Every structure is written in structure tokens, then in C-alpha cells.
Length: 277
Image: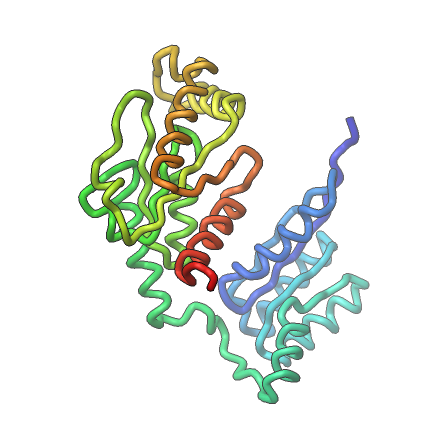
């Protein structure tokens, strides 16, 4: 088995660093057998902070990715990295240049502008509060207040997918499908929300459930919970329910939470656009 290689990845931001973290991890994930040791430097807004960071970079050289709106700080960082022969890449600069060329306007240079307390921000907070209150079948009478309702058997990632969607401003509820137990009648009556069934292969579900039970906080379950035949019947019940009502189904067996959420968003956009004429 090949040995994993490691490298140092310095992520330097004048804001929270979320953009950099996502970009850095997406890029590192493309290299099998190589893992990044992340050094996250957020809220960097002074030359003194750059000095401290450079000491760490000198001790653990690697790749430097940065988002610094202040051009003087960016130039200082690039010059210091050049002295150490360390690559320093501005993640936003090429994008900002493309925007400037197309829009014919310069950027305002506002630090952390994407985190402004605007209507979009408060919509996300409202969505997150709604999602937490409607997790795992809670408050079923409010189903039609949701933008999206995720249904599926245990361990189909309903809750984390719901939270991810809420962070995108989508009010998301979720409901477990339990073998031989009918779902709330309110679900069938729902007209406003998009109901999506999440399924996975029986083997995948059993594997995840086994890990869950063996974890330190695992719960005791009956034998049917891990029985492949019983799990198959649970999944079949979910598929039949979705087929009966014409609800779309997403197989999450090989999907990440982000990929599942992207598929849900695509379905939601398609639904809002309505049928093609």
C-alpha cells in the first residue's frame, strides 16, 4: 500500500478564511495519496501579522494561498514568499480581474463583504432555525412551510443535508421512513414544499449503521436494524411511497452531502421554473 505524502498549505485571509479553506481542500482532494497539513491564518490585516505568519512559513514551507483585499499587504506577502522561494497564489485576483474587465468597474475592496448582515444573511439564519426545529419529523403540521422536505430511512444523511441546505437559505425539514409505520398525512397534502426521497444501497446503509452502533455514543438497536433484508424492505417502502406521489428520489450511496444538496437545489430550481413550454 503506497505511503501517504504530506505537504504544508498556508491559507491567509483578511476575513474568516472560509473561501480559502474550500478552495484549498477542493484542490488538494485531486491528488491521491497526498494530504495537506493546513495552517489557517484568518483576520490578517496588518504588516505585523504578516511578519508572524512568515516565521511559520519559513519553519514549515509549502504552498501559500491568500485572499487579501489590501494591495499593500498582498504585495508584502508575495515579496516575502518570493524571498523564501515559496509559491504564493491569490485566489480571488484572477476572478476580480475578470469581473473588472466585464463590468468595466473596479472592486470596492471591502474586507469580508460576503458576510454582510443583509437580507440574504438573515434568510439563512431563519432557514437554519426552521431546519433545526423540524429535524427528524418534529412539528409535522408545519410541513408545508418548508421549501424542501427530505424523507428516507435511517442513515441516509437527511439531517446534515438539511443543515447544508439551510445554510443556503433553504428551509428544510426531514422525516424518517420507518418500516410498517405510516407517514404523517400532512406529507401527502403538502403542496408548497418539494418532497425528495433519499435512498442508498442496503449494503451502504448497513455499513453506516454498524459504524454508528459501534461508536462511543452508539445506541442499542434491535437485530432488524442491521438485517440486510429488513433494510431492503425499508428502502423499498420509501421508493414505493415516492413513486405513489411522484416525488423525486436521489441515491446517496456514493454522494457527499454537498453533492446531494446540489442535486436537491437543481430539483428545486427546476420546480420553480415550472414545466417547459
